[in-house]
Length: 100
Image (cartoon, rainbow, N blue to C red; front, side):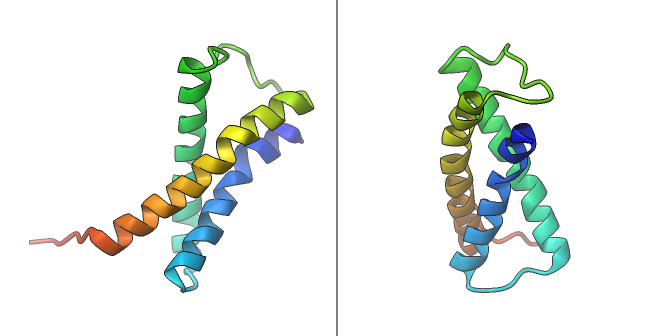
């Protein structure tokens, strides 16, 4: 259960912060897209930090992790989720994609 929480909860934070900063409700489709993109980004950031900063990337998360390992993962994941939400808002407000 700790693995599920550690891997999938921080992306919910990303979606909530994004909606709050944009002051709008997302459609179901947009929410799912943002959640999936946020989840992939958060877990990639955590993997990179664990590999290059802590040198613990070779340790498997397994089917269940110890509470201390889950806490360490969440200490990386929650700030990453917050930063990804701010980055997504900046991209949405400042980048315009057009099709010619």
